Image (cartoon, rainbow, N blue to C red):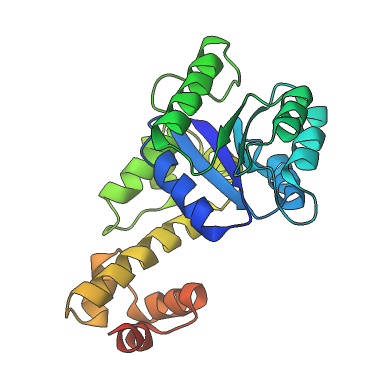
Length: 239
């Protein structure tokens, strides 16, 4: 799976990018940055194959951030986006060695085509040993979690599904997803719980069971830890 990082100081632009990325197969968003410094930090943390970066950002801007990232890894695929059709800015970006640049407002088809070209390049050149054409263990585990969210899912169970040892699976899951296996499952379950709280009149106990929590008290504690509210308060506040 190709990892993508986006960097833009405008939330609406990041949301638009996420919507486009979500419709492209074989890629996954691993992080969002609001400036060049954050982009550098997240690049070091997640080692994305593709970075989509705005040129104009506060602090370390996109050009400086891209330059530092390219110095660390000259093979990094960076797509620069800008609202300014400025020849000098674009020239500087190309000198740094970015893969391409796209003008705002971003055309979804243009960005999709650019990303798909990079994906194909990565596959053809065997760009990363973690990229495989068959379904990866992490993809398999995520699909299993989505399908069995209402059941008890242990580390041993999911590792067996992926034909890996629990220790090794836990290690590569954290490296690939940026969160622990347990935290990922809890986040997925709480997202499902929020949907049920808002769209059904099912009791909190039944919702806990629906999403795989055998202990309602534990469900309430996890829900409050993630959202800052109890399930009851969340339902009352959003109705």
